[in-house]
Length: 357
Image 1 (spheres, helix red, strand yellow):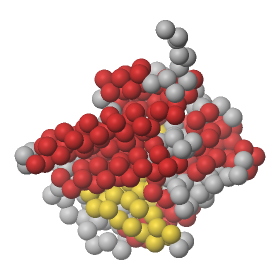
Image 2 (cartoon, rainbow, N blue to C red; image 1 turned 90 degrees about the horizontal axis):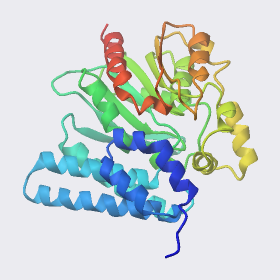
Image 3 (cartoon, helix red, strand yellow; image 1 turned 30 degrees about the vertical axis):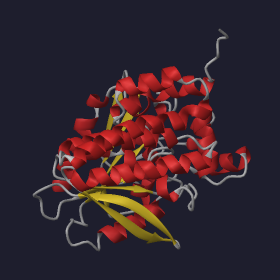
């Protein structure tokens, strides 16, 4: 039998994103089954969709039997599988969009029945729309809220485990797909001035009567760890900021990101080529913005991070003019998904303490 070499993109995906996928909802056995049994990157999305359909079918049976807790669990797993099928699959947009729709559907089903249910929100933005999920903690009137900024390949459908950190501490959450992300990625390209979409989100949040629009925090993961501090630098209504292994200067980091990530940035920035993408990456620099940050910041760095070097977190901490907590996890990789217990609970406690004081 002829041995088939495994596509290096499969190897890279398994190496770089195993902790993230499992931490954010993919069963370890499913991760191992899929990554061990496909050899071509072209089969990545379909393999994850097949796995997602198994969980979705189990969910449908649970719903028929009115077993709502089980329905939520199955649909949440299905949404995670569909999401990770599409998250970097920009080489086949038809497949990617199909998987994306499945992820959105399953996640919306979860939000109907989960504890702290979610409301789908559409916010007009530059003749297009920003879509997010508003979730409020049970039993708390007018809670403070955390605006959650996605990364390059994350979407609001990946946020369940991150949202729970804040909801269980009495904070509402608003995870949204900004320009170049999720449901907005097809119409709105990645942009460096992320304070603009965050400002539109805050305008909308402050029109609500069921949340405390004067107590708003911002949270960002990976590239969102650049977006959140950028927004905090220019948006005075933000009272606290969390940055999870974000780039201080994305141009410097862009040279070393995995090839799949680089291609996703080109596509989601609507760039025509590598040169155009690099020009945008150069603009994504906190050198001038960081000194304008005066709100408290909690910065997470991974000392073993090969995507965003740990000195980026240190640069942000030194440049900011507000009170800073720097949690450099000595054995943490990118976003410290391999050691989430070393930062997630602490960031939730930190944000709740600030927004409730």
